[in-house]
Amino acid sequence: MSDHILVERADAVATVVLNRPQTHNAITVEMYRELPAVLGSLDDDPAVKAIVIRGSGQKAFASGADISEFERERGDAERARSYNEHVAAAERALEAMAKPTIAMVHGYCIGGGAGLALACDLRFADDRSRFAITPAKLGLVYSLESTKRVVDLVGPSRATWILVSGQQIPADRALQLGLFDEVTGTDDLARLTYDFAELVTTRAQFSVRQGKQMVRRVVAGQRSDDEETRGIRNSSFDTADYAEGVRSFLEKRPPRFTWS
Image 1 (cartoon, one colour):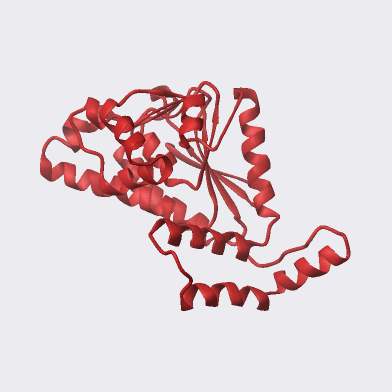
Image 2 (cartoon, helix red, strand yellow):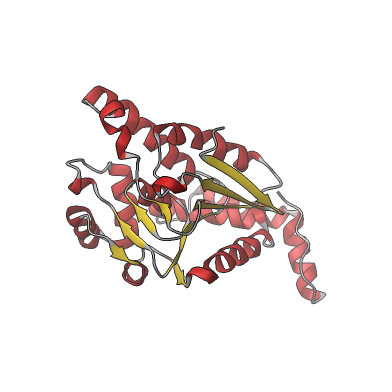
């Protein structure tokens, strides 16, 4: 793993850091290549229960893909196809994680940075943050998968406005639109983010991960329970964590969940 992707751990919370502060954490193709393996290792690690994605420093989550690479990596359709596959693979790996993911957004969240943030489950931002999706300013076209993530959050007309304008959206407006889930002051963002991540780690992890799956199914268009979703729900009654949850409630004490 390069020095441009760092992994930090604190108890059951892991943090993936985009570490190029000198470029406002602009994302290189090598970083896109590395992310699926990094994320996969965290999803497979039973000691990790929640993942925070952030940029180094407090000036940017990520200012976008590294445009200085574009002539070399995206100079024609053939090279662009390979580059785009790496971007899509990184975003899919993030979106597909079984464990909850939170983008902690300081400052700029632009272009490729916005793409990664949108692939997370939640986005917590500071009140100086600026969000933008910028293909229209570069003569590019946003992918269908990435576009769907925007539409799912804000609806078709607002997604169109975001895409065709390429304008930077201030944090309070991004919160209003649904692009951000929480907005707070810069000095409070880490506390807000990690307090929530740590809260999630105290919950029954079977419930947390299957809850994510249920949301994912609804977003994909499923509207009624089928045999599989009924099986998932019914199987929760056979887990040790269900028995512990009921016991701890009756005994008026915090639960000690063990499923990982």
